[in-house]
Amino acid sequence: MGQGQLDAGSHQRPARQENLVLVVDDEPSVAESVELLVQQAGYQALVAHSGQEALAKAGQQWPAVVISDVMMPRMDGSTFIAALRMRADDWQLPMPAILLMTATSQRVAGEIMADVIIQKPFDIDVMEAEIHALMRRETP
Image: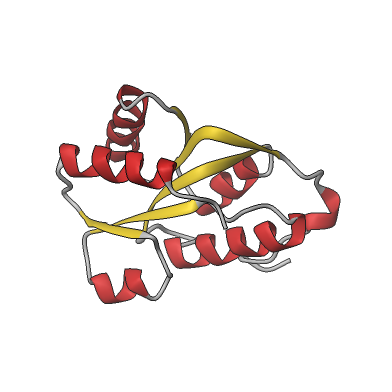
């Protein structure tokens, strides 16, 4: 099975967690900072340090919001988000709201069809406001 492919039939459909934010970043210090920010904003945080780990965790608890780094080794943010969209379709779950963190071109991040793109290093107040806004949005 390829990097972005999934075997959705081998997993039971996870329950959607309305208050859960999945944080995906290969840099532990960034992941920890965002995790603390999410918790201080009043939400539950689930941390993964790779796209593969994030897909496994989403298969157990379906998040309402995903905050992902764009540039990660082995499975970048684009591949991870595409695989997450496949799972959402396969399991007939609403696609989580996506906030991408990028230190590079917003053009690359925009091609991933994110709800929000934030440049690294990010402003804590801006990040918190965006998390609140994504949590309040109506699911399709």
